Image (cartoon, rainbow, N blue to C red; front, side):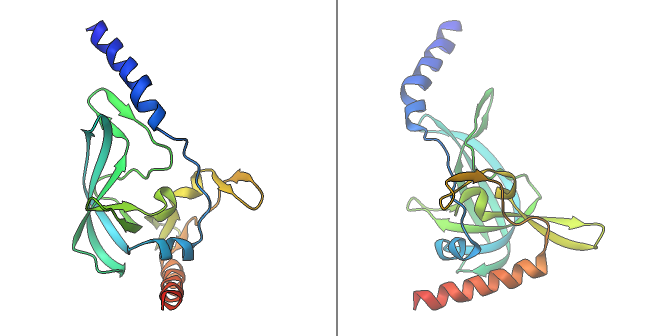
Length: 186
């Protein structure tokens, strides 16, 4: 058993670690995210499953599309992201959003050549929906608001992003960003 574990560790160090690159996110505006996305939707997480694929762990998440906001989306989309947990093995990839069954979010989707979707901008393209008991309203918080992103202008890392924004205001800003992106693409 120890020799198998030792071989697995050696395999990971020789083949997998060199393939993994450090995750550095550059701050993207709502307009940039919108322009990069093939679709934007309010979704509810239905199923999360991590599995081995070609020697690496990937998480495949099935999301029910509750409210399409941009693009022609089916009623259910599958998002594939690196990392996850399979048995005793965990692969962590900084910057990837992690979904839980039943939670709701607004996500920016980009089609993959291999089929299915990824999340445009990873944590930057993921906006969690919560209920604010004080205001009795739904609010939106961008995953990247808790993740250090690189500001190219100042060449520094900082945390910023949308935090606890009323969903109505977020929808207004998103609609304006979608309109601007469509006008630019004409």
